[in-house]
Length: 292
Image 1 (cartoon, rainbow, N blue to C red):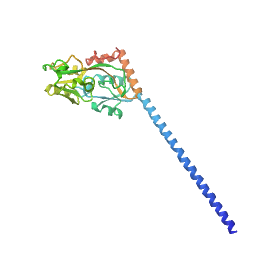
Image 2: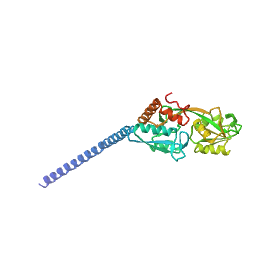
Image 3: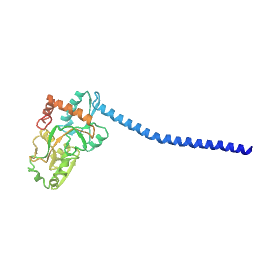
Image 4: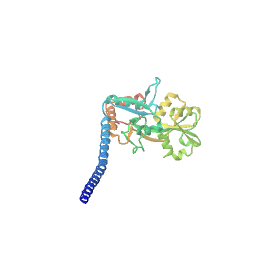
C-alpha cells in the first residue's frame, strides 16, 4: 500500500513538473514572438508620422520658417525701421500669402545653416543660396537668380584685375560661395594672396575694406551692387568675375512635398508678373532667371 501511494505521489509530481516546463516554454515562445510585433508597431507609427508631416507640408494655416543671413542685402537685411526685409523675404511673404501660411523670418549664422535645417529649426534656406555643387546635399527648387562672384576694391587702390591681388589681403564671408571658389577652382589665384581672411558677414567685410584692413573682398555681385549704391563711389567692382552660379531655395534633402509647393507658387508669381515686380524693387531685374 505504501509502495502504491509513493508511486502515485511520484506520478502526480512528475505531471506537475512537465506541466510547469510546458508552460515555461509556451511563455518563452510568446515573449519571443512579441518583439517583432512591437517593432512592426513602431515602424507603422514612424510611417504614420512621416505621412502626417508630408500631409502638413502644404496644409493651409501652417507656419513656414525661412532661415536667412540678416546682413546680406538686398536679399535679406534689417531696414531703418528695425524690420527684416529684402528680395528673398518679400518673395517668401508672397508665397505664404498665396498658400495661407504664416511666415517666420529666422535670422541664422550662415556657417550654422546646415545644423538649423537638419534640426528642423527652419524649413528652408532662402537667402542668396548657391545651389551649384550642393545638389546632392539639399532638395532645391529650380534656380531663380543668376549670380556672379566678384572682387570689390577701393576706387583709388590701383587694383584693376585679380592678378593685381598678388601679395594683398583679401576678405570673404565664412562658408560662402566665394570662399568655396577661392579654395576650389580659383585656388591658384588665392595662393598668391598675402592672406585670405574670413568675416562673419559682408557688412563687416566692407567696413574692413573701407578702413584699409583688407585690400579687396570677394562677394556676390548683387550684394556688391547694393553696397556700392549705398556707400557712394569709394569702391569699384573688378570686371573679371571670380565665378558664376545660380541661387535656389534649399530644403532638407528629401523634403520634396514642401519644395514642390513653394516652387509651384513661385512659378505662378513669375507668370503673373509679381516675381519681376519684386525683383525690380531691389534692382535685381537683370539677375533673375525664373520664367525667362
